[in-house]
Image (tube, rainbow, N blue to C red; front, side, top):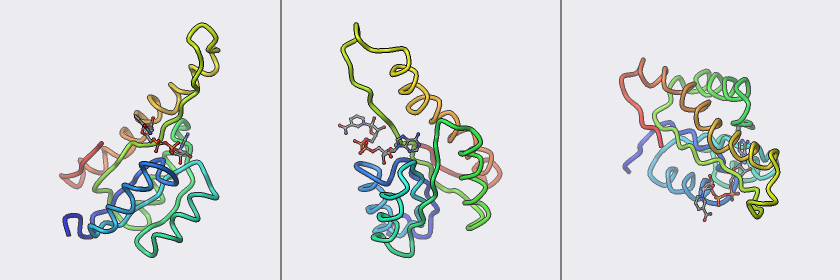
Length: 134
Ligand SMILES: NC(=O)c1ccc[n+]([C@@H]2O[C@H](COP(=O)([O-])OP(=O)(O)OC[C@H]3O[C@@H](n4cnc5c(N)ncnc54)[C@H](O)[C@@H]3O)[C@@H](O)[C@H]2O)c1
């Protein structure tokens, strides 16, 4: 197993690609934190994946929410080996009809969310002398 006891945070892992990644990481021996906005799907996925999966609700667009996520993971397991910045949204619309609000929502999650998560996790990886960010 390539990820034996590695601790991974996968954002947006309650659905889709993130969920598939969480399942695969666990098959490879990782301990996975499902970090997602969707409470119902997050709890269901964590239950389905078993004891190596934990759901923590987070809004990656919100700095304080991300700080709480990282603090909870460190408190529970003491380290973070892998961060997968997968959470994302689309607000599809014709460019000429897209509102400022739609555009800003995508930036807040898909861009600022990555900045928040990476910036909060990196110090723990630096302190540990290892870690991977995706
Ligand atoms: N599916 C594709 O074809 C495709 C192609 C290119 C890139 N992507 C990107 O890959 C990622 C996953 O795509 P997917 O198709 O699995 O999407 P999905 O919609 O199935 O899953 C995205 C997950 O992110 C979560 N999420 C949304 N906003 C969040 C927030 N603010 N905080 C925390 N979690 C939040 C959702 O609840 C959901 O569980 C996205 O970033 C997407 O933009 C997808």
